[in-house]
Length: 314
Image (cartoon, rainbow, N blue to C red; front, side):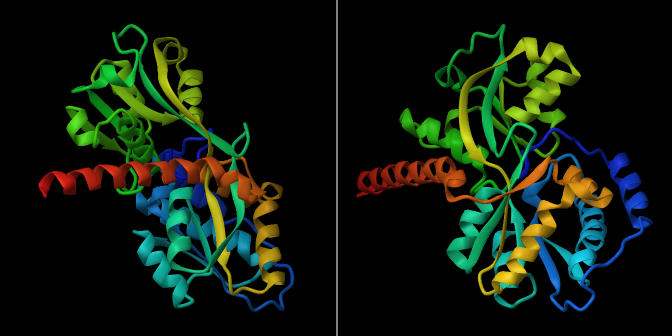
């Protein structure tokens, strides 16, 4: 799930080839007089199936190629956390921010940012989360997963959309946390290590996006036949690109155009493949509605549980 969810999975070997190829692609710069420094920040939450070093190298090269055409100077910076990226924006070190919706929602509490674009897969700008189990198991609902093993994509465990969704489902039924409900909660960055343990009966359930499940089923039709969702959450946002609110409108428009035209160039297509999306779309507030509602419900339920715990202690 990556922050951005799409149908392409980039291996380390492919990444190495990608860096080599794009480094020699010729680039023609437009509007040479522009002085705006195109500085993009992104978090590790945005990717799976590649190592951080692979990500940093490929994104850096691609951003330089793409941004040079529109702005000249450019750089891409990896940040370990939202707080680090927020500090960088405050100091002017970064002006464009890239990440999953949960990172954007946290960023906007800390710094003045405006969303301008949202990523989209071949099926649109929405993504769907699935709680998968084997069809031949005796598991038909979340209640059947008590004291079972679940695998969840690795992200920031505090605010990952995967963690927030499953915790919300549990709290609706009166259970406080994953750790006390499941026997084991495993986190993994690699897509194959999410689905395949369930397929091979090494784990009881996993959470993935619809895109990842469909891709896995396409590559191995037996997965599609033997794994089934017992819970779904749809209409969630994919990745969001936001900008420093202090930027003038003409610069914002130029940044927006640079991303919207990514499919028009070889290096732009490579960048989209790395981000595992098909294209970028202009952001609209309603695209974030379902995701905001999920996080708001989680906060309400958690507050209720915390209040009960305090009353019990008193």
